[in-house]
Length: 196
Picture (cartoon, one colour):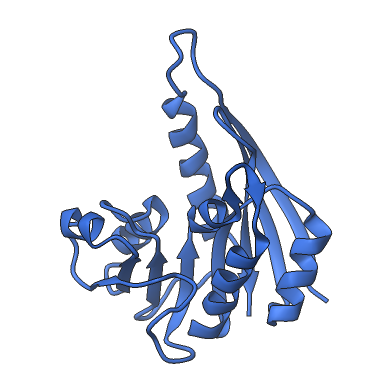
């Protein structure tokens, strides 16, 4: 069974301002706080040549991954996205186009796998939960990280016990709940750090 530790330190409401624009200033503040919280995790690696996989990197790379790489320049980062067009815009080395639910890496290739928003996008289709996709992504994240590796992910809030049961079944043994963001256009999301 996965042990859950809650460090829910910030709740960001990213609802629109009076002009209907999302409050990106609040989102930036939430991202800054999230980086600090992940960095202070009791199992967070901060030395050596860390191997880090950015799942769903998009056209600029995940904020967390970019910050980690800037703070620890010896980190070896691989940027992964399904969209070749987005990766063409990404001005970073080590880009791979692949499906997050079928990662093209051997077992235990990374110390950290980060899926900032890909899990959220995978579970909501036509405003309905489709847990199968997020489960496959989490399972692949578990497969490609080494023992004591971290899988950091954002998940649309749903049945917390089901999430814990799924992660336990996959093989994760610890879970830290770090952040909740209430999105202006949809469901709230939670960010977790899972330990293999």
